[in-house]
Image (cartoon, rainbow, N blue to C red; front, side, top):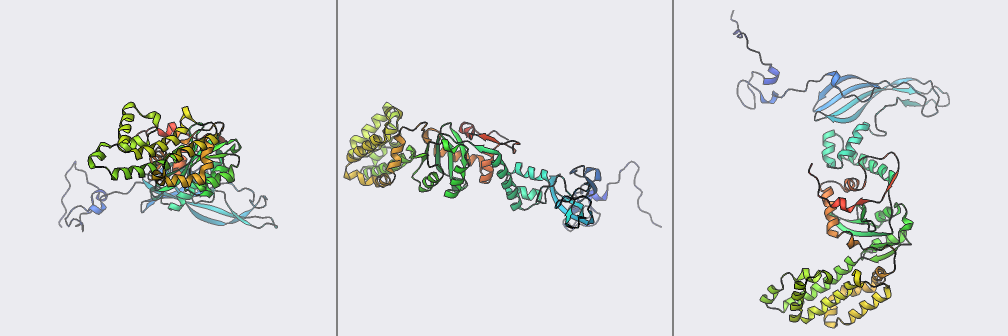
Length: 463
């Protein structure tokens, strides 16, 4: 009888589970090791099963298709009937429910909880009810700690990645985080200020509104869409809204309608940034006509003229003023357009600001009369907006207490950069929660003035 070779003393036998079977592998075609079976499964012990609460007894712990499955039984004592409050119900069978739990060891976790059913012994009730499940979220097949984990992760991760790791639906992640934000907004109220600003921006591939507290330089809110309904609801939730005296807006009928519906006592006025933007459109049209009649050499000599034409007069240096004067000597028509823009924007400068609205209106009309018909058609947009919004442009020069322009607090580019940097790849709800709210829901209600723009401008710290 032939016998196999006797293993030499001192040599260890390698388990077949770790190093494959001695049969040919269909993947490599070689005799010896099977790559498809080279990874050993987790060694699971019942003592290592995740504990949910002392009210549960674990009886099984296994792994199935990358998911850790824990079987446990609820051992909560029987209480009173939740329908009528009578004690003394009788058993009415058992039921199993699958509950999602925190991911563990890089795998999703599912708890199969066995709980009892009861039937009320009161003749007038006779209704059935289930055993209470501690540490399980209300109205969700999730544990409470998984809900907290989802809300924490949603601030820095996408909903898709969170759902894939926990093996839950993406809609569930959105719903859990939406409930978290609703509780946060109930506990954290934003204070109003004497002067606010509604600034339209384009961030995260969508047009939005940003509400600023220009009195203290704070960010109050970032709206999901540029709609009147959302803006109206946000303005209504401000605490102390009766103290708002003035609100800076653009040439935006949506913002004006929402403001008049929610804050009728506030005086709306057009921010100087919006007025300057319309004036620069007319000035650039006049510049294009002037440059079309110039030689290429003369156009090259005017390089960098847009920045100088847009800058305010008090911020120009002596060298820049000399450059502008040289350009105006070559093209007197460009001087007319620039003088009109300068005359209007000079009314907003702190040193020469008008103290009465009627004086500002008179100064703008005088500047328009000196423009001339050859340059007036370039500023047709301003003429149209002046006829429709002239009243709100003049409100910026009224004796309003605490009035402060939005461009003194932050530019549109800065606001867009803050929102993009805080939430690129994330939802706008996560951006709002990260910028405006504390990490967790406070126990007691609190009132805050908003998020400091100085803090939001700081560069992000490396993780």
